[in-house]
Image (cartoon, rainbow, N blue to C red; front, side, top):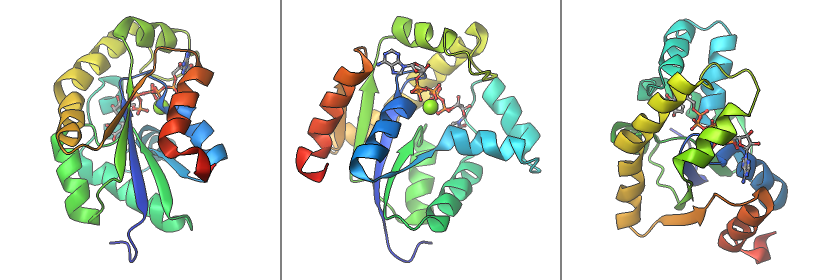
Length: 190
Ligand code: UP5
Ligand code: MG
């Protein structure tokens, strides 16, 4: 458990909605530390950890890795970092992730940034990304979309009911999306 609770913003949205891209912008302009749960899991595979093969198989199938694994990585990353403002990108992805994170860390997000984007556009982006991600093939992409609809959207609805969701139309050019993002984080903080 962290001694002092940091400010946390969850950055959610479907596969390819632009979470990573916009987080990179936010880091530059607002001094947040960006923690992508997917990036942490991919680093865990590369490091040859005992969970590596399991994580790799889950990602290949678009499935959600057990929350204790992801939460441990997020906690460690927060503890190793001096910052007290974090963007947690791509987590929580289901109700169990959400409840377990809150229970284990005692952290509630200040708000949730939700990048709303049609599947056709997300599919186009993922198929043209070309960064060698093992889950950027049409079979896995379709599975990722289904998991997002079935498991991740309910988390967004949960926070929406608490008035915590800031929804952004993510189907626009990167700069236009970032203008909307900036308006939420507040020009005074820039
Ligand atoms: N792009 C971005 N914005 C654009 C724009 N406005 N206009 C045109 N193009 C735009 O963007 C994707 C591509 O689109 C890039 O080429 C970009 O240049 C372009 P990016 O910013 O990377 O989008 P992002 O939403 O981050 O897409 P990503 O593929 O990373 O989202 P996923 O949620 O699918 O991936 P993530 O890495 O979070 O998770 C991968 C897998 O890990 C999951 O499927 C799951 O198996 C596992 N996982 C867990 O099990 N638990 C977790 O907690 C997290 C992940
Ligand atoms: Mg990403």
